[in-house]
Length: 159
Image 1 (cartoon, rainbow, N blue to C red):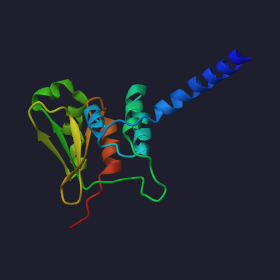
Image 2 (cartoon, one colour):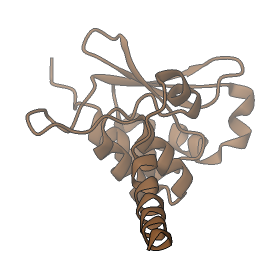
Image 3 (spheres, helix red, strand yellow):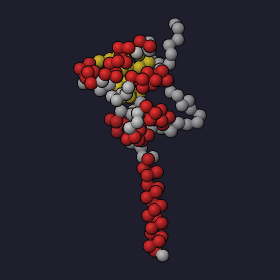
């Protein structure tokens, strides 16, 4: 009888462990190192999962996100964005080059900033032009950048 109880307990623990582990949260520094400091809401991770089919990346994103609250607006938007990248490394990112050459003009508040040795990242700006979020985009495709900016950057008002 004791062996049976031990077996049931072992089954219970092994089935609960993955659930507990999936809710593991990483420190903000670990998240920034992984490139997920800008994906604040878990709904952003779910959107991210639609475009990036790498389960490990999605899992890391979910470890860095904050649950969307019912009373908050789940769609955070920004007043502008900066694509920061090293000009010498652009040769390794043809999707980003294509975006810069053919798509960036769709976003009047979008700027490209070249910084030596910087990995490609989007810096999202608030109404005062201050940096609010940073998102690494090393493996993003052009259409992912387009969709993300369309969803996250407020359209400019005629002034």
